[in-house]
Figure 1 (tube, rainbow, N blue to C red):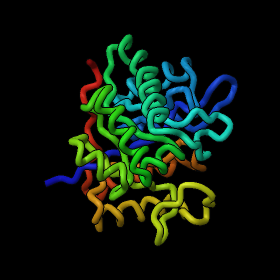
Figure 2: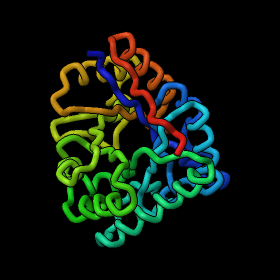
Figure 3: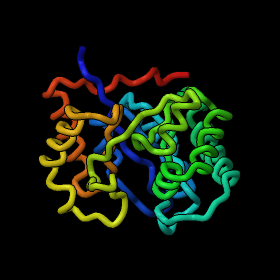
Figure 4: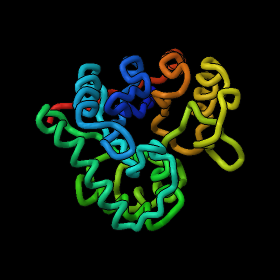
Length: 246
């Protein structure tokens, strides 16, 4: 049976006069786009523009939700109660969904961003608030999560569809993935990254369903192109998109 893999990217993180990431150059090589919803990054105009861009490539569209932390681009830890996290998630899902609705498109998934992603991966109260928000808003959404994390385990127990994720452009050590404070030497060249992805997937013990390259990583489009082409050449198929129209 042919192996299938989703390739995802965090996009739509520009706002106002600030331009962030290589969104347009990433679209030909991905199957899922995680669009920032206006709190950690993005704004209404960028959300609409990014939806239109993703739709033009037939890419699945999901919500990339984070803490209200523009200065830190969502990477700084925020002490938040579970109810606050629930409210942040509902607010951002609604922001993206409003533009999707008028475009006649549907949302396919949700992926947390930065510190919120890591907190939900490790903390029971944050992971439960996330799951409760998804169940209340749309339990049909796929949820992206680190394998064997608090979020992945609890989402699976709640009956949500979990997409266990591997970060191609982040270093991994004995303690798992290093999200912050890494350097380019730690992840290797684009060719080395693509070969590492193939090796990880061929030896997969985590039931991975998606691979991420961030749009702001140096040489991100080149990395994603090589990952895409390396997997296809090795007999993988890139996940066909869900039907975009509502």
